[in-house]
Amino acid sequence: MVLSQSVWARIGVPAIRRSSALARRLTPTGLLDALEQRRNYAGLSSKWTLERLLATKAALGITGLLLGLLVFIPNPTSLTFLAGVFFTAVGFFAVDVAMNAKARERRDQIEQAFPNTIDQITICVEAGLGLDAAIAHAARTGSGPLAAE
Image 1 (tube, rainbow, N blue to C red):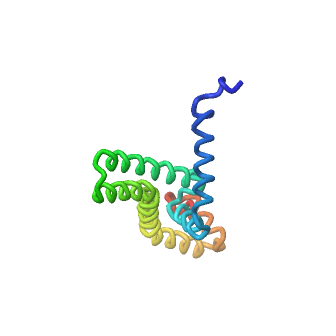
Image 2 (cartoon, rainbow, N blue to C red):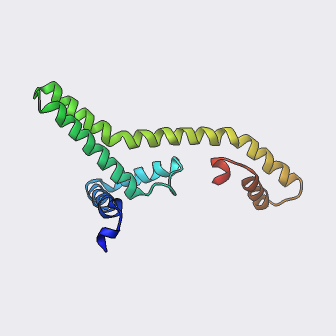
Image 3 (spheres, rainbow, N blue to C red):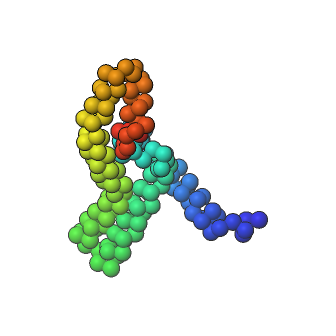
């Protein structure tokens, strides 16, 4: 029965669950809330769960740590130790940098679509629709993140 499952289902999924649980325990609550807020700003809430983000951060951090050890072990100096710390930090914070870039891009798209959406809502209200119906119409006919919101 167990061997009929794919390798990913037997190894990958449990590893992600364990690493996200470990990351959740080690991360302060305020940072978890901030990560969730950045995830929402980036528009990733339906695609990336908080556990998946934490597991990715942990996996990239461990990868950076291993890369840092590969640099440090053959030549143990203070410079290679700092390089190892740098690789670990870059791996761990890569998800945050990517989410901030995605949030900035999404905010720019919303800012560009906002004037047209307000004009469309204004025209609908002047044509006799109520405000709720005008907003619903703008959401139905619009595209992009502002219409989705």
